[in-house]
Image (cartoon, rainbow, N blue to C red; front, top):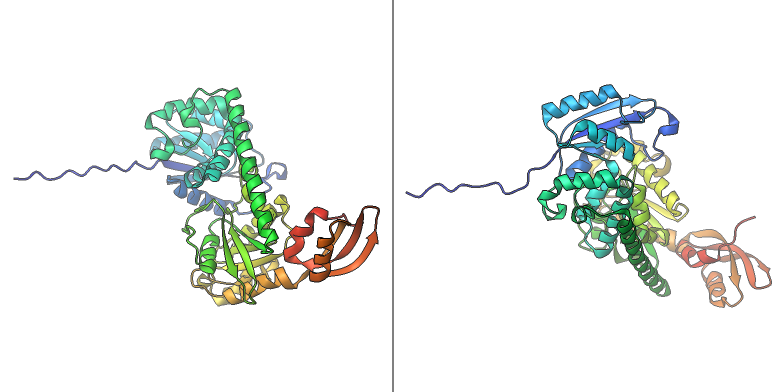
Length: 446
């Protein structure tokens, strides 16, 4: 008689995570990028954990005037979490706020060697490490990881040495904090870290130079560009797929795509435009990522216009949109022509739409990227922003730049000219798509 076949579960068991959120009342210690209420921020943190492959088994929150200088949370709350560790047996303690190296060190000492302590920044970095598909993306993530880990070097390497038996995180351990540069250089010193970071920056600078050449080539072809921006999981990739019939990965996950994708789209009146899908934003976006993703984010700063995609069905749609606008301002792209797409209209009751489209969203256009609804109005609005609406400029054009002067007079409107020794100071208006062309010659307004 044949013996029954034994089926073994070869899938790695997901690590169990316990979440901690703190609401700081003192404005001096508040995160300027934290717009969501604590409850919503914790829900977002749980989604980040799910994206990273963690199983959330519990959470707790606390209100404080200011962080505890040693353990970030109060001593009583820390003892409560230790009790939950014994009851739930979680492996990872995840804080919704960024921890200082001292906070992390003290918390790890208190929690013991069986629990890894990470913060939102480390979690997002881990997700980026999982999702980066191109060489550029991998370089950017690795540099960001080093920037984050360098101040935590001694403790981080000790922790990785304890966990190293499972191999590299990308090969299937599923362990948060194990992917990237740490797992293969457990004894690396600060000098070698600095050398590696210098090499990464050089390689990324080359990427940045190549991107600049590509953009200049596109501008010579007079094809305007539109950067698609939005809060993570707002539907940017789905929209690009629908507009251009592209095959960009689109999943109902946070940070499903990291690497920018550009596609050409024909507008209603026959103009062509290049749409670029960019990395999604999120509240408390790690500064290390903003710095490391400079080359990618330049696709936004160098674009002729911005298409801001908002998940209008999300209960915190307005707060998420404000986070995106603040990030654009920090990147220097806040003054670009912007078209707002209120996506996922199929999930919003028509009676509720007026309550969503208020403030900065009042000019938004309702669309459904999934059902391809509202595209005619959206594309017409983008075409108007790029080719029809004139934006005021003040530039100082060298006399030898006759081609730019001719372009301004042909496509825009010259309001005043003031001859100078080597240049011509001009005030006027140009279509939004030409702002990038004249930006290097911008003259400050008096």
